[in-house]
Length: 146
Image (cartoon, rainbow, N blue to C red):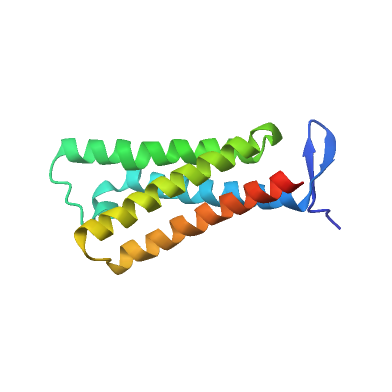
């Protein structure tokens, strides 16, 4: 039976604590979310932008949307995935995850307050950002106690 608390690295098996498993799961979830949405934004900027009511009327808008929403999110996803599989980068990766989730979520919350409305889609996205932020903070807290 496979020991899910161990990882092969360089031919050696390393035993991981439950804290380290939580941290890796946190980073991988964020990497998949950011990377997945980033790929979607790159591949289908018009369709993905419609989901949030953005009209990409010309090539300049589509190029900028692909770069900002697509390229940056794919890069962040790759960074977090790399951090998940390199023990010395896990804490730094969790800080990146927390700051990205706080930036997206805080900006979204402020924007909803300024607009005086909270559309369902934005509340759902805010919920996922809050979840990823709390997961990163909990992982950092647990690692700090180990």
